[in-house]
Amino acid sequence: MFMIFQSQVSISFLPYFEALYMHINSSRIYRNTKTNNKIGKGGSGGWASSETDGVELTHQQHQMLQTIQSRDEDFDMQLDQIGEGIQDLAEIAQMQNEEVKRQNQMLDNVGTKIDAAHDHIENVNAKMKETLQQVRSADKVCVDIMCIVLMVGLAAVLYQIIKKNGI
Image (cartoon, rainbow, N blue to C red; front, side):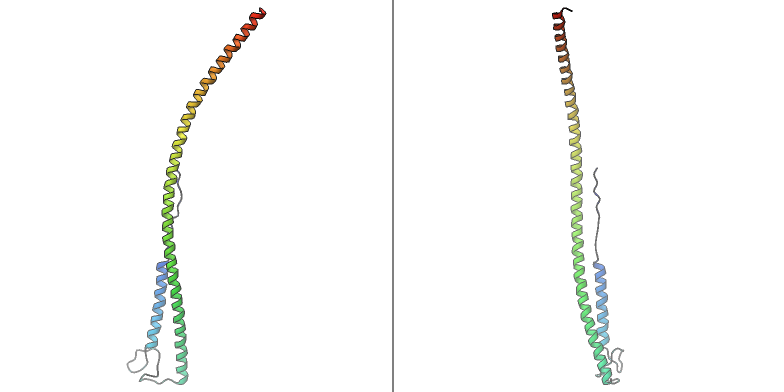
């Protein structure tokens, strides 16, 4: 039997992309909750704000806080872009996975058809071999008959020559 070697490939990067996306989102959510917390009476810690009843910030501290918050917003935008890229990659990986599954199924079908064609060719070859053996035996009989006819003809010619010459 003719066997075709197939590669059963299943690409599924989707769980990895989803885990990375969840990690990025959880980091962004953590930073957002951290920036919304205030230092003051009963506060739970986090970034200070001048709107609290607690410690007042200096102008320099307030500017630094705004710079940090601006950077956090930039980081959040970059993380959102990375997250969107990861989602795009996850969709591409999912489409590739589906395509590989379709192609594996097509390979299975081709393998089955090749096996069927191989069996058919073996049957045809066996029938041709039988036919050729039958034809060869008939050819041999014809050649034998031709040889006998030639021998009889040659014998008749020799007989005529001998009879004419009187030997």
